[in-house]
Image 1 (cartoon, helix red, strand yellow):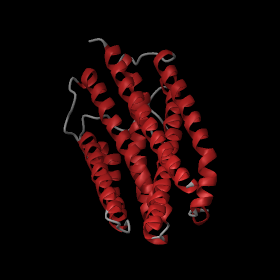
Image 2 (cartoon, chains in turn cyan, brown; image 1 turned 90 degrees about the vertical axis):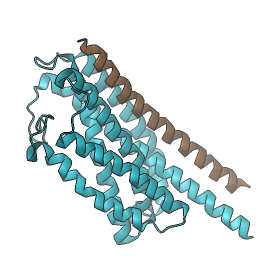
Image 3 (cartoon, chains in turn orange, green; image 1 turned 180 degrees about the horizontal axis):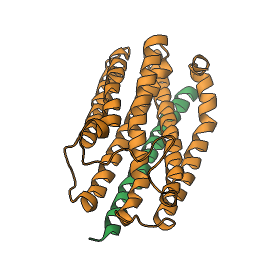
Image 4 (cartoon, chains in turn yellow, brown; image 1 turned 30 degrees about the vertical axis):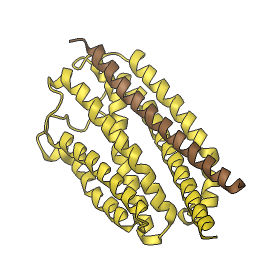
Length: 239
Length: 42
């Protein structure tokens, strides 16, 4: 499957119709989830209305970490199988991953002020998420510099793999350290949040995830087209 | 403390930021694919 998709022509044949499906499907789910989260759920007995921020904060945190997981998987595929599309997929995941990490930090900070009484605390979860954001910025700069100097993409790919060390630190920070950030309220099988409050999260989570997929496809298509232009210009200059 | 002011700010940041990255990616794709098509037609 991965090997079949590694062909740019085959990839574009799938990516072109898939992009609007992910884009409009994601937008619809996200807007419905956000509307439901603002108007169709009760306030929390402790947090009050600010609990509604979780419908954006949790998916942003999920995609901030998911973005780096995509970079790591694509980097691994690039290093092992040398698929050029895997290199493009890693590069295309970096900017949206960084954007969602930033949204996670900003919405968390906005939630923290009325709930904890502070915008920021240097605790394990917040600091490791901030580190991930800086690692994204470093990856973006490194990948861009590598592409500009005609590098083979191996250095950013190795950096992409090395950065995965942060993911378990973020995930388990609330268990390993006594953090201000609350412990895990959601796992794949159980939740400590009541269903009356929880249900719109399924819509915003799937909406954001589809949008992330659409963004990655659009950025991969842009990189592929830019590569074609560059190759053609080079051929024209040589002729 | 008015909680709705914080909720509104979070939604502006979250939805606005997502909208901005979607729009920027779409414009970059359209620009790059248009440039590639024009060059192929030449």
